[in-house]
Amino acid sequence: MTNRLAEKPNPPRWGMVIDVNRCVGCQTCTVACKHWNDTQPGVQWRSVIDVETGRYPNVERFFLVVGCQHCAVPPCVPVCPTGATQQRDDGLVTMNYDTCIGCAACAVACPYDARTIAHEHQWYYGTETLQEESARHPEREGVAQKCTFCVDKVDEATARERDPAIDFDVMPACAASCISNAIYFGDFNNPASNVSTLVRDQPTLRLNEDLGTDPQIKYLYSTP
Image (tube, rainbow, N blue to C red; front, top):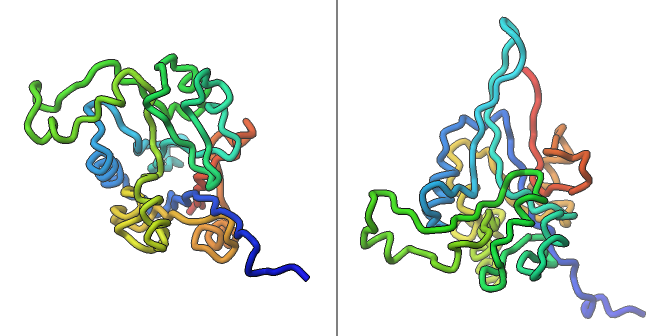
């Protein structure tokens, strides 16, 4: 008989569900991301695109939150010549800044335009302030960088046995800050999780799904 207590549980598959109908385009997620991750001017790991479709008088406007999709089949991983881009068992696609050589192969391979290479540091006020000096990340200069789903928060949640899907202090900054509750973070490997329930009960779409990348950001969207 198999000892069920000894069985290793399946690792989570972290991902997001973003409700396009709830997003108001306020950019709070963008600001929260920049604040938590100390990104320099011109570098945004989380962006909000203002989209208009149709022709007058049948015009529709909505906002699309975009960034690294943490694809289940990430095209950025196999093209990296140094192995700096890796995919963890929990699905998060991560960067090793120490081994990245800034060749931009990953940026070219990414169909979501989710990666940035900042070749030199910039400051918000022309010269470096004391706050910027303390928050500077020289390891990111000249190498590829992108959204990590706030991997530091996710790892803290694991270490403290907390759930980043519901505990705001260990939830990715964009999800925790969303004023309209449009961004959900959770485990797609758990059929009872918040994100699994949302995509099971409502119609969804994914960006560039035809490319076979299996993006782990899924959008809830319905026309009026």
